[in-house]
Figure 1 (cartoon, one colour):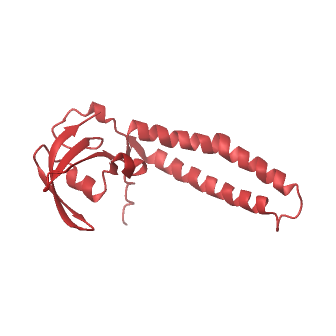
Figure 2 (cartoon, rainbow, N blue to C red):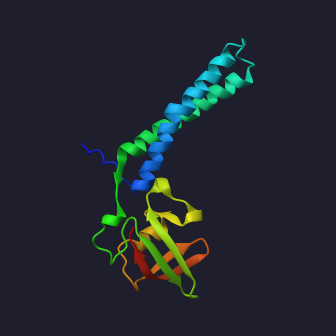
Amino acid sequence: MEQPKAPIPNYITPEGHQRLWQEHSHLVKRERPRVVQEVAEAAAQGDRSENAEYIYGKKRLREIDRRVRFLEQRLDAAQIVDARQQTRRDRVFFGATVQVEDEHGETKQWMLVGEDETDAPTARISHRSPMGQALLGKGLDDEIKVQTPGGERVYVVVDIQYG
């Protein structure tokens, strides 16, 4: 009989973990009770089959409940990793902020974070993304190759920071 696979750990920074808990708390303590009240008021108006406020409210409750369940699963699987406590700072690990240079001399900087905290505008990429995977374990002056939609790109690691 085949052993069940262990769940893949959900690595997350302390800040990312706090944001997920805040969202969960907001949905459970504020948003859901407010929507429940709105649905109750809409239901008191009579015919529910043509009551847009009631129909929309029920739909919103299902969305909130679905998001709460998702957040609970992600938080249960979360393994908080504080990059400031990384002792080996000469290599790229989870939580590192890495600066790279491409073949044209242009530099880019990314922070490797968990899947639940990626944010392109702030250059926070998943450690499981193609770029994140290519960077993990690399040191200064190491060359990485990453397949992008525009073709293969080559970068050199020029700086690694933690915290």
